[in-house]
Image 1 (cartoon, one colour):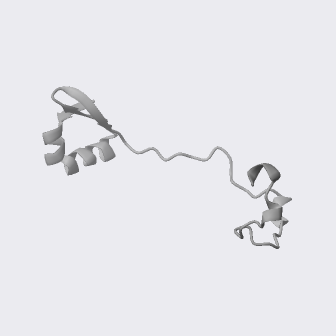
Image 2: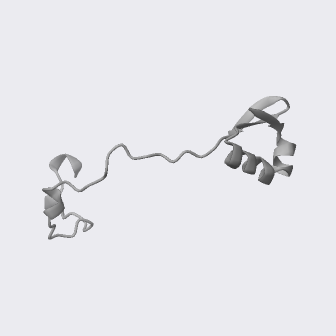
Length: 80
């Protein structure tokens, strides 16, 4: 793991990112000798399952405006 201070990280950001990208290197950025951040290679996350619509809900048709305000009679008693 390569360790750099913030000034060096700002000055050489492109070169550091190339090192992360090409050599799979992790870089520790420090301020006054104390760790502040890690620059690590990006890892693409895979979905654990394919997203598919539910067979029953896929054919559901809604024939109303779900964003319309409720009338006074539609509100529950405890919410008036």
